[in-house]
Amino acid sequence: MFRACAADIRSVDRPLQSLFPLINRRFQSFAEATDAALDMLASQVPGEIVLGQVEADEGRLRVIDVRGASIIGIERGHMIPLAEVSPANGLGPGSTAIEGTAAVDDLDSEYLQSIGLGEWVALPLEMSDGAIVGMVAALSRRQGDYSSEHVVLLGLTARMLSYEWERVNTRNELRALRQRVSETSDADADTGLPGRARFLDLLEREWKLARRGTVETMAVCFRVEAGDEPAGSPLAVRALKDAAEALAGAVRSTDQVGRIGPMDLGVAMIGCVDEAGVEALAQRFIGNLRRVTHGRPVEVQVGHGSIALGGTASATAALELAERAVSQRAVATANGSYA
Image: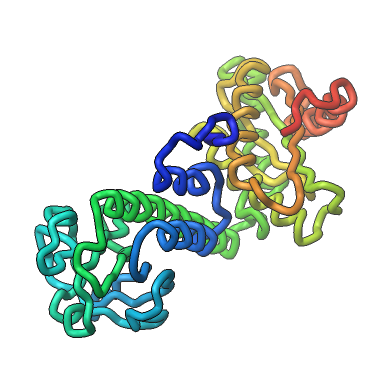
């Protein structure tokens, strides 16, 4: 993450200075990202700032948040008609600064002029698959209010909110998928991962292959701590869910992951032969977790321990040794493996 505190931004133009709060933090929700983005636009762009969701079936934009001038008359819940696909965006009469701005959809010019608007800029929130889910717009009763700098600020905001919108939707879809899996299998209800019994079944197969010399596997235990919160508390469960999500994004496609204890996650690193591979996974996992939990009220820490399956008496013994190694590692070096 970029750290603005390491640079002197006083020589940067004021409109660009206003962008630093948006690029120097991780938002915990789309609402938080929206508040920051619209507050920034309202301080830099004239008129009323509108964020809306496209209701494609109705051909309208439903306003979900507004900032800035209140004389326009467009409020939350307002429905603004959409125009058909056009080659230019925000075409107010006599406008030149915003001519040629590419767009998929535009707001209906006749409607906007009928309510007294003289100029506007409207840019789409476009997903990675090309779908347009919303728009961010600046509306003014006066002509000549908007410059190219305003278009750039709106465009960057649209890109940022598009990313945040898609990130939230992706997380919701993954959460729903885990819920469906947990309802139809022995998956853990909190994380959507296989439980300890199922994980041991998976580990047993890999242990047999390791004992035959076919392929080595490292059994890894990651222990999650949420400050002083006891296992099972709401904050601890939230931390465990975050950790499961971060770990799922860090493991390789060949690895197996499960919940093996109240605050423990297990990984069978198939084809991994030593601690170097485990350390690489731990660093990816910790990096993901830091990004996910940044700004949370409770600091989340992770310790890990591991053992090679081939040298153990059974899959169960290997998992127990990996769990024991977490505590031994923490005692040996207080800061060595903790996020």
